[in-house]
Image (cartoon, rainbow, N blue to C red; front, side):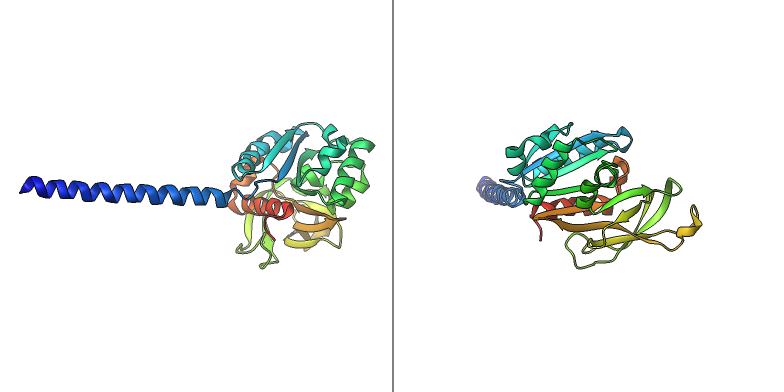
Length: 256
C-alpha cells in the first residue's frame, strides 16, 4: 500500500516538475525575445580623448548592456571611423565619449552629415559636451558646450522638470556628488532636467538654472545629452544610469 502511494506521489511530483520546466523554458524564451529590442540596429561606440573622464571604463558599462539588448555594436577608439561614409550612413546610433579631443574637418563633416541625414547620437558629460572646443559646428549639433564647473567635485541636486517624457518619467529630484556643469546651451533644446547653482563658488551665478538633460533634433537625427557622468562611478547613482540608458534608447528610436 505504501509503495503504491509513494509511486503515485513520485509520478505526481515528476509531472509538476516537468510542466514547470516547460513553462519556465517558454517564459524565458519569450522574455529573451522581448528583451532583444536592439535586434537589427547598429550602434557605433567611439571612446577616447582625455582619460580623466574614464571613457574606457564607461565603455565597459554601456557596451555589454547594448549587446545584451541585441544591438550590433562596433567599438572604435579613433575618430577616423567618421570618414567612412557608407558605414556611417548604415548606422542607427553613434555614442561618443571623447573629451577634449581634436577632430579634423573631414571627420567632423562625416559625423555631422550622418546625423543630419538621420543617424542619431547620444552622449554625456565632456565626452559629448566638451569634445572639440574649437569646432562650433559640432557644438551647434550637440546643443551645448561646457564652460565651467565651479567648485569642482561638489554636492548638488538634479531637478526633473519633465515628468511625462519617457526618459525622465517616474523620477524625482536626486542628489549628485560630482561636477556641476555650467554650459552655454541652445535655446531650442527640449530640457528634461536642470540644476540650480547656489553661488558658493561663483557668487555672480547664484540662482542660475542650468539644463542637465536634454534632447533635440539636428536635421533628421535625434540628439540626446546629459551632463552627468564625470567618471564611471557617477553611474552608481541609479537615476544617472537609468536616465542615460533611456536617453540612448530614445535616440536610437526604441522608446518614443
